[in-house]
Length: 176
Image (cartoon, helix red, strand yellow):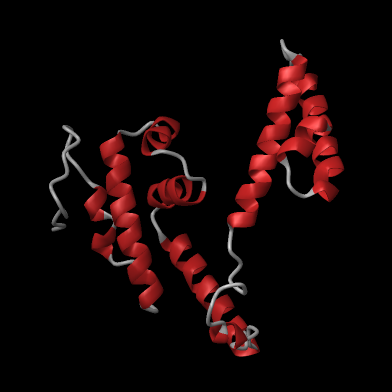
């Protein structure tokens, strides 16, 4: 208490700082016992005081100058906007369902599950280059399907995924 009282200017907060320090020390000792408990207690109190000073330096937006921009009324989501958002989500879901199976799985694992390209390749048993190709094609197709109202993918959409035995991409293949 004497240490905190000597360095902390607001005497009405001293008991709070002491209590916070005790709590933090107690929680820390659950993990490992400090080699020098007294030094650990003082360091904890010092860190708590530094945190309080840092928090005080953060200026509230309201404490700043011109606050006129804060008086803008925030619009609630209108029923029309809500319906529009649901329709857009449904359109995206339909477009996603139209993707070739591997493209769909690659996009799901990379963009939704946020797996790395290498993890997706390992999980699916494909090369990273093939994963790149599926990502590129799937993204392009999703953009097209969400913009148009066509019901079936074009015949050449999945042709981009074809490659020869070397695994090299030769662009869209011609069908005869």
